[in-house]
Length: 538
Image 1 (cartoon, helix red, strand yellow):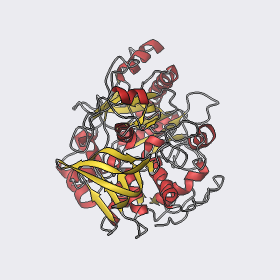
Image 2: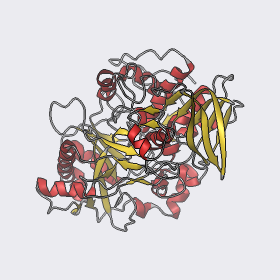
Image 3: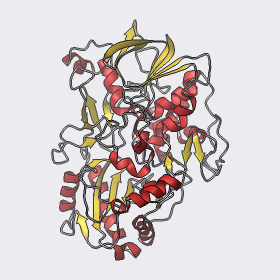
Image 4: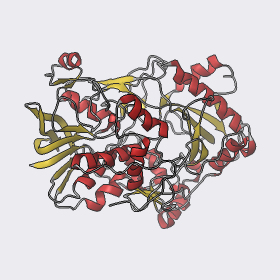
């Protein structure tokens, strides 16, 4: 018997396991469907490209996208301790102030505004630059500057500046707008996942049990209360009981799937799969993700990352954690606005000094620079539904890419700005022609067709168990409406997807959730006009 059973040892689950077990009187079980995270390739930043379609990837795919040429889009999600923080590009981005204030003001999420969450970002962080404004030191999550910067990504930043985009050395500081190099979740040049920062330092606590290769199949709900979890581990079925709460931290795909398998979801949909309805709720609805397209340029005189990955540079990395293997691949980028009057940026760039064809699934020996143009003010909303009542069946994922024309317009504007940058400054002398979409795509109709044929995920799904007022799945304390003793703590509770990469926001949500669960007073909201970094509590 446990006090808390946490389903999912991704970013949120690792945070919760660490914070809840600070109280030695609490007994916590952490279940992870994937294997442990001990593989060497998890720790090497450049090896991020090897993580797809392997044992650490859920390997999801969307249903055919009606507004994106009827294509099914590959959706990688981390399936190991640390979840996607063990398989992602390690970029540390918090999102815009406007995102969180919108959660508070438009969705009824009291306590989740920017000034409420900023102290939790600070508490989680161990910032290489020190306790500067907006940042903290001493937290579990190490954040560093990149140790390696490819000449092409450096040229892109300088060219973007010359094209009119301001320099920004800290996208998580006073302003998000601008371009520069991303900070990353590295420690001394190696990946620093949520498992590395939160879980492994405390995994031997006597009040914590961690079980890997354990697929949760059902939340046990008795008399309107969650009492435990049924799961499969190494071919055997087991049950774990929770005295206090069951907490779902499986992410925007797995958490809504498990809720629906357990009878919490749209009633008609559940009945169609023969599932008894416990609570009729909009689980799976409102799915959001950042769509992106890849604009590529030939760089015939510059070696891309794949040419620099050799025995010599690997030895350099193994000895000093420096050189090309210390690259997170998506080294530089930034945020921009497609028109005046917007409350926050609606574009994000990720610059990869290497080919990135078909989401990295196609190897290429060409010398290419890849610019991922992402829409981060997303209007389209989709849904996640069950394929069947089997927990082994992957759910039906429909992000409804480009169903709102506004998203298409953002991406077209981003392609045009990308071309301007490539024709400016030092990048202009390194580029030998546009590889995709190609100069022949010179009007909005051709660019729209390119977007529909090439639009893919930027790997940031959210909002399938959204918190908020009214009939939202979860209330503002992340408790599932209609079931006592059941919470969701992960990216699925976000009412809308924030502007930027979602790992840091997920960790901050879990930090605040841990206080809510333990009954601790929330951290004092920051004075965002003049925030001061401070040592983070452990």
